[in-house]
Length: 407
Image (cartoon, rainbow, N blue to C red; front, side, top):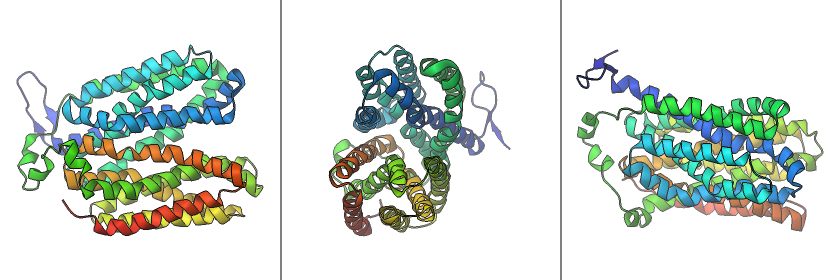
């Protein structure tokens, strides 16, 4: 292990070759706290909220939809901030937004007040200290093995989705939902604040910028240039249907299980399977993204999604549901690594945050599609027409990917 002297006042620091893995682990923790708290723990709060506010399930689901729509709208602005300002301070602002949101949520007396919090403060936290921030951070530190690093980084969301609900379930029983919100606030500050101040004190060395390929890596793309090139739109329109399909299957899984006539406990097992398969998908697509044409990997994800939708549409047994859930998790796990790979390889790292910010608008598609599928179910008594529509969207997107060019 080598060490580098950076100044007369600083202690010796681990070389960038090794320090970047510390930064990567920080990104994993950052996503586990932010996404785990805001997204994965939401389901656990819905039951006490339904009891206290007496709202309908539709109105309750609107809460999480507002969060995802808000995050999609803020994505481009957050991406620009990540490219322009210190990542350290941007993430701390995101943390402050999350802390304020959790503090205010403890005082609400009506569901519409939660809507305001989930539509304003929490989207800020999601974009400034969530996946977008972590992916931007990793892309700056890794030039080789970038795809694998992006895949590992994206696992943070699933780790948070596995660990935090365990704590939240216990806290809800002992201190209620308001006390649980306060515990999550304390946990966020005690973990994210010191790690951010300690780890983000330095940036990757500039010697990497001297490599021949970095002329493109360091180019600053304008918004007009980004939004007028097929290098942005082909991945966007390719990945948006995958996000739509994954969101539809994930958020309607409980109803599908009930329709088949299986026990409610099956849903919990399938959700766990989704998390495990998503981790596998992120590692696979991230690792292979450094070695295989990104278009071929996309076609694998697209095919897995089509298989998942077809199986879910015709599922009558548990084994078919298991296969469909595994396929959906694999493809869903590949969305973020593929997006990061496609955009970082073609736009470089200097504008990565801005490009990914626009790319994160696919979150809105994933938020709206479950609502549309639910409407189709209410009207026709089946998800079949919604599933067929998803397949019809994915097929031309897969064909268009053949025209994705290199940078």
